[in-house]
Length: 213
Image (tube, rainbow, N blue to C red):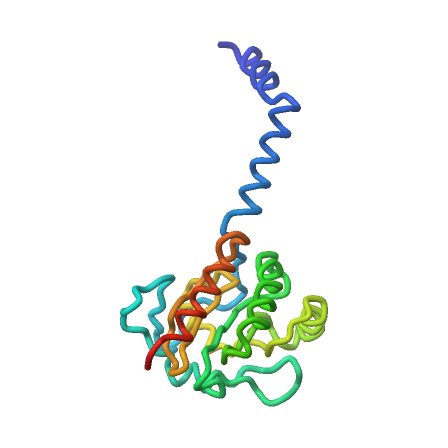
């Protein structure tokens, strides 16, 4: 087949209807698939203690403990108050969310986290949203984000040692960690799917609430 004929066939194949169909399909994949952004965190090359976290674990599996270095890390608070320390939430179920203001999937997920916080806070669940951005460069954008999405849980910036230890080189965001009252990780979520992530987060919080020490 000559190059001219081949080119003519390709032009005929990409009719307006086919082009429109392709755009719609790609849009649906983007909308309903698990989506994430790549964090601007540095690569995991430090000596931060390793936290072996999994996307899912069996009900009776041994839960990995959050290292003391992570629990006691001082994360700058957006409110300007005292630093956020995960150890301050000991005795409560905790959801830690790593995110960034420029991350589209993070923006999609935040309203769902706000809903979950309102639903579970009275049952002893707390949430902390820690941006992986530079605190100095993103101070204004983070405060605008909190106001725009009516975030009513604690927000700040992830300390380097905390981000490195929890993310373990997997820098896709958003990432969420469900932590039990005694500091053990029940579930880890990477990315966001509007259909599946919210109910899975809710289920993980329920599991953590009934988790025995």
